Length: 190
Picture 1 (cartoon, rainbow, N blue to C red):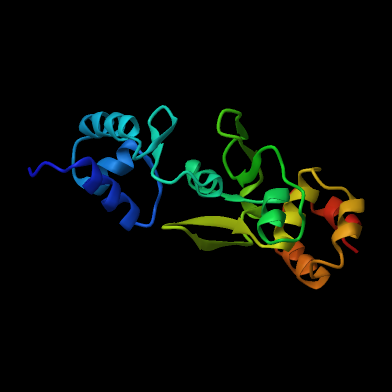
Picture 2: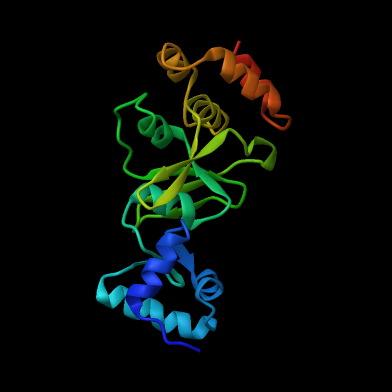
């Protein structure tokens, strides 16, 4: 097996389009055993070519949105963070807010919060290229729908943003959702 330099590993990782890797993903990418990748990861972090996010996870990009979008999968950036990304609000949250079909998680050190939503509400997001990687971000109407479902946004927020978003699209997205909480959403979104 040919030995790879740390720079080659970083370049291979970035060329793949991903920025955040678990040791297993890095192992699969460069064709080395997981234990060897753990050593490589430590060296990459020491050399400043990568950032350690959590135990067993590194990132080759420092962009918070890329990290938040790829750290926990499946997930996408939503709520106020998505509205900020789309330029609908100027309000900056202290943490990047994401939604996932997995359990809710909070990573204070890196400033990312994941809210659990039902699998039947896991739609309405797109992949956007950012830097040498990508982010998964909710469409503005879906970010609002997620926030209403999670009680992060109120009916007042809906009224405030009604000029910035398409109510027709919001209603169409709501109709796609079949699950607990649908009646509550229907009352809010008339």
